[in-house]
Amino acid sequence: MANGSRQAAWEFFGTELKRRREEAGLTQVELGARVFVSGGYIGQFEQAIRKPQLDVAQRIDEVLQTDGIFERLCRKLIDDRRYADYFAKAAELEARATKICEFAPALVPGLLQTAEYARAVTLAMNPFAADEYIEDKVSGRMERKRILKDATRPVYWVILHENVLRVPVGGTTVMAKQLERVAELARQRTVVVQVLPYAAGAYSMMTGSLKLMEFEDAPPTAYTEAVYSGNLLDDPAVVKRAQSAYDLLRAAALSPEASLALIGSAAEDFRRCASTT
Image (cartoon, rainbow, N blue to C red; front, side, top):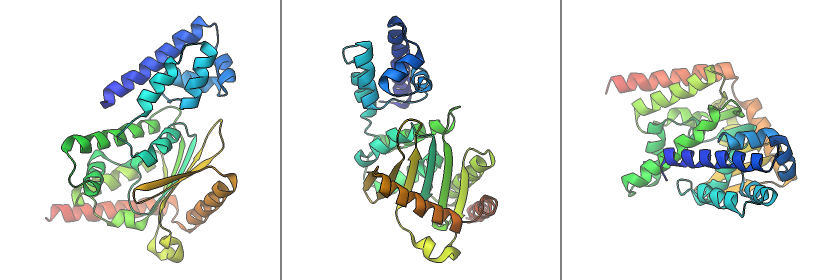
């Protein structure tokens, strides 16, 4: 399903939810209380700002007695082949998070990627794929970024390993543009960015990405990813250890100001290389 048609489908979900809720004589707060989310979340579902989890859609059907229409719509829309199977659930949770803390050891995180950078990464991982497949994956990644434009966007904190700044993914021009975009988002206070420098020593040897997500109405969750695999961790003790590990990385990283300067310097180096080739 194309990006525009998917958004239109979620907007239909929201419009239909509002119509059925009003027919039942319920306010957003009243419906939210019955399906165990806030009234504000119901409002965001109706405006297609946030996407409900499947279990929430099922409870809405039960309360509004809508014969499973919202469950069917939700199943169709979340069955998105643009996301790898192991990441699909994490992408769904990401859209609901009120706070996201991420450590990226090798690549710019998806929420910060430019289309050119995302295309280069996808091509590298799928060298024999058809153009349609590549563009579908890039489109999915660009759609994920919408959450950073919403009025209810999450607090977003990213730690980039210095490797991320040095490897010319997609070539020097693409890389310069990508780093400039990260710097721009940091200056706009859309995201707080820190760089974990090589000088951090043992801390800089941590492997595997880590994403910590907090929610308004659910316990925090951690997501870790390796090659072609990902794990959602919701055991409170494990999530607490992951949060402690992230705190150590944050302490070892450069300050946001120093990180922004290093990102700018790396972008300028790539620009200079691009202009001489």
